[in-house]
Image (cartoon, rainbow, N blue to C red; front, side):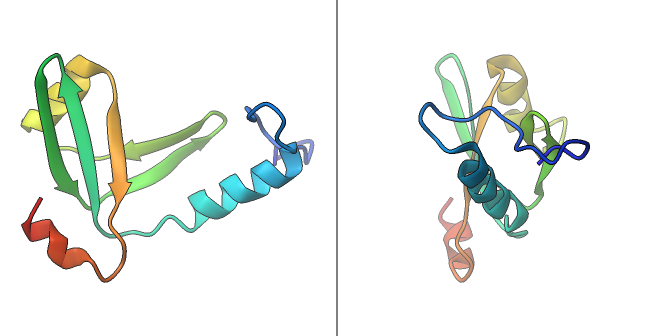
Length: 101
C-alpha cells in the first residue's frame, strides 16, 4: 500500500483485484527467506548459474529485487552485458543441492 494514501501500488495484471493482488505480492516479498539462491545470467550465447546467499527487496515502487555479485565474477559480466538475471529460491532443507549447482 502506498504510504501516503493507503492504496495498493501497481502495476497489476489485467483482471486482478488490486487489493487482493497487493496482499499476495506483499506476502511473497515479506516472507522471502534468507539463505541460498541460484542466480542465472546470460549474454549472447554465454550462460551461467551460480549460488548466491544475498537477495533482498530494494524497492516497493516499482517492485525490485537486488542481489550481490562480486564485480570480478563471470556472472557479474553476464548480468552487466545481458541486462537481466533470474533468481531461484532454494527450498529450506534442500541446501545439499548447492554441491550440484
